[in-house]
Length: 156
Image 1: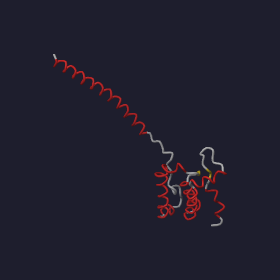
Image 2: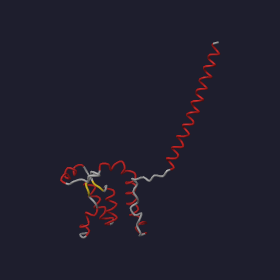
Image 3: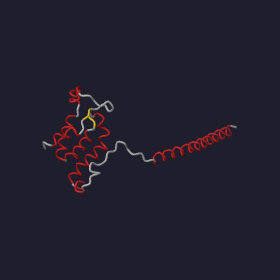
Image 4: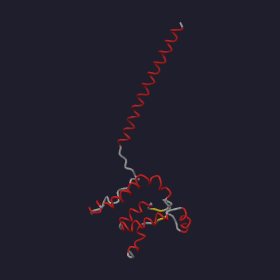
């Protein structure tokens, strides 16, 4: 009698495991289909920023080794590192976007000088002096566009 109870209990356990695994298999396949569907839909990354000379008409600017090094460095920083670091930036546009616009607008030398100035002003010590200025109500950051430095273009 003892053996028949053991075999019955073993067969019931095996049968219940088989039913559960079949049910899980069906759910698992639907989960895989959902994941496949979500992965197949290409949603562009809203934080991906293009290469600085992407829309440049001049071929010499695109293949210049200095532009490739600086533009590539800026591209890598913006798309890999900036996502983790730039949350504390005081200004809008962000410092890396400001650098890209300054280099595009004024050239490499003046763009790097303006970018260096901007990066030195983007810290907690300067934030205390910015209290007399009003931040942008949407982003809660201070406006500092490249167009602000147009008057300096004549001096250089």
